[in-house]
Image 1 (cartoon, rainbow, N blue to C red):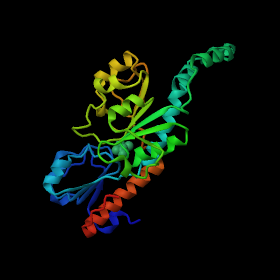
Image 2 (cartoon, rainbow, N blue to C red):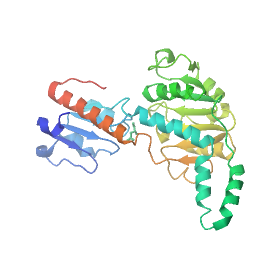
Image 3 (cartoon, helix red, strand yellow):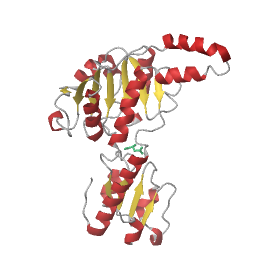
Length: 299
Ligand code: MLT
């Protein structure tokens, strides 16, 4: 892999707090992950921006398009990492693992009483198995399809729905994944629901009181896509009345942290060394290719 700086291009990593003051330090390309671009960056000679990740909501795509700046993301490069954490979390919440571990840490200082207390905990944190339960997967791109296929190996029933592409043409999807014709059908059938769609005006707040009203009581919702897909006021009400049994979110904020039955995760979905390397390499290759040859290849 060529070092992008070695190919003679003026490329900067990490645009947070990075400002362009004049044309002499204006980059041709910017590689970034979660940083928000300083507005002034776009006023100069930037030709392309590559995000090391799937979502591009920290980049003003519309403005870039109007200015002729190409925006890349790295579809699929972190899919395995996200899939592994989702399956881990589905099993962990089903066995009350996070609550059980926290509770057990609270036993520190109880000395010889601990073994007896542990046996009491065993009764308090009885879980359930995922085998035979239904997992609904919304969005069957790279991550969603991997989750759906792998959940079959856990003996789960899997039902898929994609708001943008036909489920039959979804990326590498097993025929054993059932097809939901509508999102409501998926909501009604699922014990666990995981969502894998980009944040757009159409998907913002899609988990709202209407959606919760058709779900099974105690449905477990996993959000490893973007926090804004969930209407948090409606989510809080659904958690309070037991409609939602657990809400796992990789995008916690003040509204949900500390709430009973919320499992807040510090945006760890794609945070593995392998995934970071895959995303960085894909973004760097796309950028190099585009700046050297003009080829636009978003893979
Ligand atoms: C993504 O959009 O793929 C993730 O949010 C990447 C990340 O963890 O930064």
